[in-house]
Every structure is written in C-alpha cells, then in structure tokens.
Length: 513
Image (cartoon, rainbow, N blue to C red; front, side, top):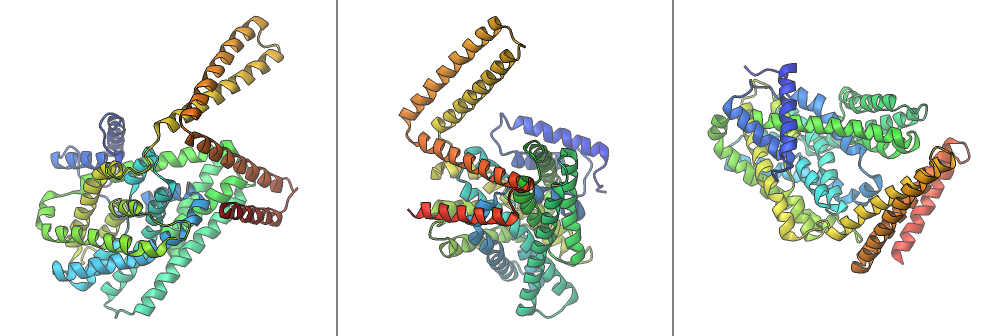
C-alpha cells in the first residue's frame, strides 16, 4: 500500500535530489526532467516503498511555496508591460484549451461530456519550471520569460477555478449556464486577487515596524500559507491569492520595509524552499507512474496528448496577433517557445488526484493526466534547448559575459583597495605592507581596465549594455532613496506617488523621442 512521506523516506528523497543535482552538472539534462527520469527508474525497479502524491500534499504544502517564491521575484514593471497577453492567455486561453480538449476527448476517445470537461480544465494549467530555468541559464529575453512565467502563475489559478466549477456541475447534476458559470468564475478569480493583494499590503506595512531577517522570513511564510488558507475559507481562488500577495510584498513591502541584507536573507530562504519543493514534486511524479495502467488507457492518453498540442496551437498562434501592443508585439519565435514550452506538471496531477474515489471516471482521468504530464515533461522538456539553438534565440553573447566577469573583478579589486587604504589610515597596516599590497592591486586593476577597454573596441554593443545597466542601477538607487525619505518623514506617500508618475511620464517621452 502507498504511504505518505515518513522521515526516513524523506531523507532518502533528499539524498536522491542532491545526487541528481550534482550529476546534471556533467550530464546535460534539465534538472527537473532528470528527477522525473530517476523517479521512473526508482518506481520501475521498486527501490523505494510506494509513496502517495496526495492532492493535499501538492495543493496545501507544496504549491503555496512554489507560487510565492515565483511571484515574490516577479518585477512589477515587467509584469505591467506584458499584462495584456498574460491576462488573455490565462483566461480566454484556458477556456479555449478546455473546450477543445473536452470536445475532442468526447468525440475521439468516447469520454462522457462531463468528465471530458473536467479533464480539459485540469490539463489547462501549465507548469514550465524546467523551461524557465533553461531560459535563464541561456540568457533568453526577459520578455519571453515573463510571458511564459506570468501565464503559468495566473493560469494555475484560473484552471483550478474552472475545474472546481465544472466538478460541482458534474457531481450535482446541475444544468450548465454560461452566464452563471462566467459570473462565478470572475467572482472567484477577482476575489482571490483582491484577498492576496490586501494581505500583501498589510504584511508590507508590518515589515516597516522591524528589520530582523528571521522575523521577516516568518512573516512571509505566514503570508504565503495564510493567503492560501484564507482564500479557501472565503471560497475564492487560493492560487491567485498567493500570487497577488507575493507580487505586492515582493515589489512594495520588500523595498519599503526591508534592508538590503534582510531582503537577501528572505530571498535565500524562498529560493531554497522552492528548490526543495520542486525537487520533491518532480521526483514524486516519476514515482507515481504505473506502466500497466498507462498501457490500459493508451488510447485516451494518445488522444489527450494530441488534443493538448492542438489546443495550444490554437491558443498561442490564434490569440497572439490580437494580444500584443504596438511596442510589444509577440514575435513568431516567441510563439514557438510559448507553444512548445507549455509543460504540464504538479497542478494537473493534484486536480486529478482530488477527484472523489467513487467517481466512475477517476482512474481513467487520473492515468490519462499522468500520461500527458509525463509526455510534456519528457518530450518538449528534453527538446526545448535544441529548439532554442535551432531558432538562434538570444543565447548569451560570450563577449558580453566576459565583460560582466571582468567588470565584477574590477569592482572587487577597487573595493579591496578602498578597504586597504582605510586600514592603512587607521594604523592597522604598516607602510611596507600597504605599499606591497597596494601596488599589486593597482597593477591588477590596470590590467582589468585594459581588457575591458579592448572589449569595448571589439564589440560596440557592450557600451549599450554598460549604459543600460548603469541607468537601471541609478534608477534603483533613486527609488530606494525616495522610499527611505518617506520612512524618515521627509517625503509623504502622496509625494512619492507623484514623483513616480512624473518619472513614468518622462520615460515614455524619452522612448517616444
């Protein structure tokens, strides 16, 4: 009989994840895909006792941590630029995906209409964690990364809401009403966003009362899980509540109420938490697969895979021409990535596992979902990097990477020189030692300056990169200073808001020119 994760099995799973993490440094596989493969091997060879991947484990324990970490790190400015395509893909796209998959399963796989719509709703939630990690590693355009990540964060919420609405209709036998369902859908979605935003703002105000990294970590943990639980009690979207809370405190609370050191500590905590949770999720996905049942429902799985791909083609290529802005069109190469990078994962599986035990189609839907998830993780997941190379999409420029390394070394040398001068002026270092070390540092600085200047001459684009980085750094310093002045009482919140509006107007004017 399967069992929940006991401490001994948990430790073994941690050892497996650590081993896989070290192995992928030499084996060129995405980390999450490697974990699924290892999980499959462990499951087939019965190297561990069967472990239940329960819906509560995913939705209540794992999911809030993953969602909060991702939303905490989202830049609100980038999200604003892409809000239109993300919103449409996460709402209209989810509905279109659900209808196409449901009708296809009904007519091609002989699945009753109600269960077909359940499957269509649950499989609409994308989970491109491994793809996003690869994009960041390759230095892909941040706009593409934001589109894929933003859609995933928000369509997790909308797909869960739609699934629950369909499930209620199927179980109660109630008649379907487009207006009633659409109204309930909007109420639950907007209610979840509002709940999370309010809690995120309240937590942001609390962070101003103290500056202790342990307390801040505790507060953000309470916010992540508290926003989920409260939304569940209010019967609004718990997923979108966590996302909204993370975006608000990540962009507002962390900037106005946390010092740089505290922010780094909180970042590190959530980075590790997300790494641990994602590792366990992908490993457990591999452990769940039962090949005899995959064969039994092979027809449904094959039809499901084909329909998921067809629906994604319709959503991405059909909606993209209408959801870009004049300044942010979605290029064809981006559309290819949005299509092939829309992997499915833990949310789909959790929804399938949450079906009632007595539901007649439970086994078929669950195994079909597992089959589709496994396909998207292994096929698109393993071929996305070759596709990136084939399309020649913004891979890291070796010279720009070399420039960044040299610049970092130069900054480190200069800070070391400043420290040495301070030590000498305070009498902590003798004149002889100071001269020896200072000469060495000055020589190394001069060498780095020459190499940086040579790169400037070889590649003119480096100057643009340097100017952009400097401009962003200056803007960050100005924002942090203004927020500090608010805390000191030298500037009001209203004054800060007016300055921000003036700055946005100036930026738009400069872009227009």
